[in-house]
Length: 224
Image (cartoon, rainbow, N blue to C red; front, side, top):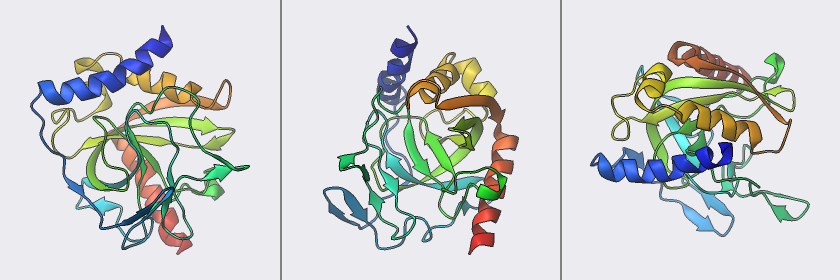
């Protein structure tokens, strides 16, 4: 039953887009060069874009579109978006597809000194699939606090600045208007790497999410 619930979000995202008359999302499509397992933009995906857009919106680089399995990620050294390999095998999630568009906040860092994994801050954008390698303006509505093999690996939860679920502003709103969505996300993250690797600590609201975001931006700036 739980796995069926997780799969539902992918269908829900596509059909909701049609039913609510959504036509577009504010996206910057980079003029990038694409090879089979690498996307190179005109700027460094991690260093080339600011984290914040004004006081309330953030930039997100989309790494993994909704419903897909390939675990693309930004290479912190060269700034490319790549599908890495381990022992000669490309990284693919052995589970159901991602329940939202997975990406990272540029110019951010989960500080190893505070238990973080040393990577940019992760974020999940709810809604239909977005283009891999695109830069999307989002509004944060909350956070999933979690541990991945003992390391802090928080996931911000966000929505496109315009369009999908435009009236949702908090996790409380999301649960009230779309019951089950938060459960779907937590079930997926708890299980997508296999049993016992990921521990869900808590679900936080927007204020907590922005506190984590500001700490990640500060950690990045201190590193530079």
